Each structure stands twice: as C-alpha cells, then as structure tokens.
Image (cartoon, rainbow, N blue to C red; front, side, top):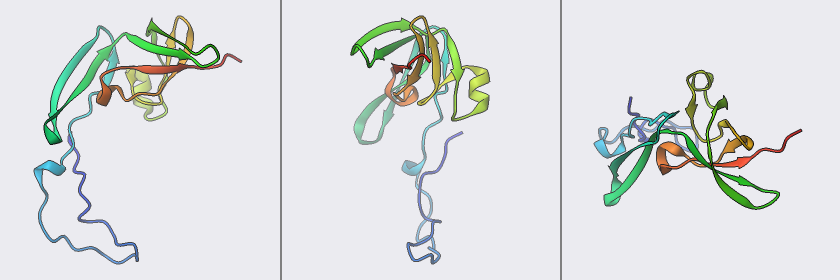
Length: 129
C-alpha cells in the first residue's frame, strides 16, 4: 500500500503545531514496496519524478558479493535469506531488503544495496568467526 510522504501534519522546530495550508498532492505519494523475493530474476520498470526510470527488483537469485579482505567481487547464487533485521516477517518469507543477511556458496553476506530501488543485489561477505 502506498504511503504519503508529505510533512503537513508535523510539528515546528519550536514544538508548536503546524496547520495544513493545503491538501495532499499525488506527487507526495510513494510507490508500493517491491518486496524482492529469492527466485528467478524479474525486474519491473517504473517511471518516477523528473522523467527518470527506476528498476524495481521483484525477485532475484544472483548477488554481487564483495570480499573486503581480497577486494574481489563475484557474481554468486543466493541460497536463502538467513536474517532480516528490518522485519521478522520478511525473514520468514525470504524477502531481501537493505541490511538483510543472505546465504551464498561463499558464506553469509550483508546486503548493501536497495533491491526494490536499484534493481540489483550488492552484498559484502561477512567475516567467519
């Protein structure tokens, strides 16, 4: 469900109340969340403000994983979502968001990109204990 991103009802810096001087505008409404799942790669193009195009990643099974110790980036397959701190429900459903921990053949990796906004999954390999 789209969210309204306006600030008509917020408070002033002084703590005083702001009164709405106009109604909500359609350009202040955000898009629906892509909720990228693990599966065959599917992308959706959407037109955004300023005539730009945003690629939303609906599902993906490949990630660009960077090993910081060797500075090498490899394209590897995503096995599953191990942990998703943004939402416990996403963890159970296997939804990939920024900050999610994914399992790959190289090991666990921390997602640094925003798949629903960028259209790609970039991750950093986590150190094994």
